[in-house]
Image 1 (cartoon, rainbow, N blue to C red):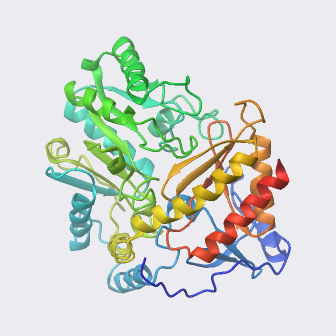
Image 2 (image 1 turned 45 degrees about the vertical axis):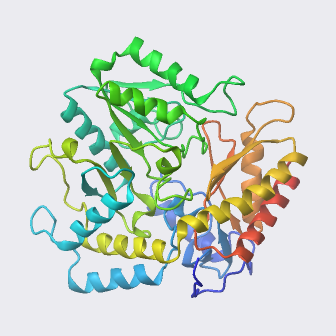
Length: 446
């Protein structure tokens, strides 16, 4: 990583208990104005952010180990992104690409054709959110194949819209009482090495899923398989080696569209541009969002030209899809990722963090597994001597870390996983401080 000049001091500093008085006052205002269904992980309100820190309205400087859920890979106020946004907003904020198009949309599509796996001819469509990208990937697969069924996996998270809720595995809080859901969605067993039968290989886990697909659906009825190469909300589950390639091979043989949901794992997060790269797979369609545009709302699907070009004109799009300000931010963010070699930085973060956390796991029986790739890391907590999930201790650890000024996110089907998603531009000293706080929180909680 080249030398980065930070705008804010890159240090943890608490000047009030958390939440401070101004954050508490905002919470009171929030209760009277914002729907209760919108939750927040921490009770502090941001006033500024840069590099690896978030400064709240009370002046506390907290270490950001969440990146807005893997969005601010280049930091929350990268100067290239900020300048690109300001320049584009000064010219025009919107025309709608479907009415009066503009070059930056094409430039983003050209970049994604280069960055996504495979050297085949590709096409791209831009949208606003990860869920919207997933929905449109399914639309393309169904139209292109003339089939209806779609396979998703245990522990999957694909969004909160009606179709993507059907694809998502976790009921509470994402699905409970929001049905009925979209039909023709089938769920198959995931490769989850920590919880699978000991010795089950990736190929065997894939054959297990394929057998169920063939039995319950039939390949001739299946439009698409959609899977996160590393599952996100489900617990940062890294499938066993061979699982994904075996699924891809079967899909190719049977004319099934293979969709890699890289919404959370994309854009240098795992140490490659996309998590699919490390698996050696080339998806038919890749869905992207989060880290694509440095915090601006943008998502995309990039896939085989023969698939996407089958859709009739007007069949794909949306009023705000590929907004010009978001496109400018994406081009600047991709430039910053290249300039700072953020895939390499993610690998470095992963090496530093996993070394320390695995050493801690040797001492702490409550740590069931440390896993992940690059700067997409997780610690799964269990009741000592068992593999029974311990959500209570996980919640306690996150709360203790926040008390000391470190923002941590939890996840997992069972609520027993802490995920580490620092901005990829976090400095080594700040990362070391965050890990020290996390280690202390774990020791204190267990």
